[in-house]
Image 1 (cartoon, helix red, strand yellow):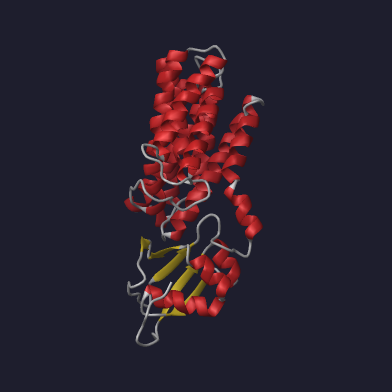
Image 2 (cartoon, one colour):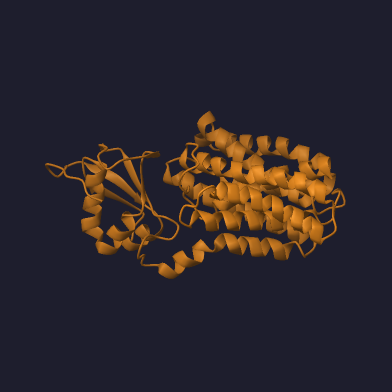
Length: 342
């Protein structure tokens, strides 16, 4: 990244660093002179060396929560944020850590599959833990844009949803909506920074999704479900759909084939195949699979909205667990789907 400035600026912009950039620089925040975004980055590259510069080349740049161009001007109070890709750039210093983080979504899948073989209490606890990890990942994306998210409130809603579903059954799923509103509203009362609509609304949306997803998955494996294999079908369908969609996204462009089409079609086929394998209602799971497929695809738009502040179907939103965005949405609607269809 380069940007020509006639003179070195005397005022200092605030530069905020994440992931490998923070580790290379040895700090998360630093004041850097520069009149433009490019000038700030050039100065930082000179200060922290070639390893830093290599990661910067593949990083996203934000100013005060909005994506920025190199020629954009910066003022004394502006905050420039550099957000590396999940992989950490071309040659990150902490390569081993970056490699591990890339496979974290697969680790979450494995944990969920194993937890599904255990007791209902362990299953519910693992669901809440996954919701907490998802909330923390979203928190990092929000923080990079200078926005607030309350992962503790979101995790509390997920736990409340699991508990209410376990105790009250289907009524507990509906009660989760009221619990989400109450918990997020209580958080806003306790902390003034969370009282504005611009902050409260996304916190409530994420809390609702986490709570409903957790309640839905608990109910889908309880005595209230119409099919005791429902969670098995769900896990298989979303795993196949998300993994093959991600694989296509990393391949050269193929006519009539894109990640969204691949995710949708393979999720439906996986649901039908799993139903046939376990001798379940194939026609019913065809319709359920269509609902899950729509949610997975819609989850990409949800992901970009939450993580970047705009809805787009191009580019990968920042974060480690972005693949969970669509899965959480699919999980949230899964119990109502199987209750109506099966």
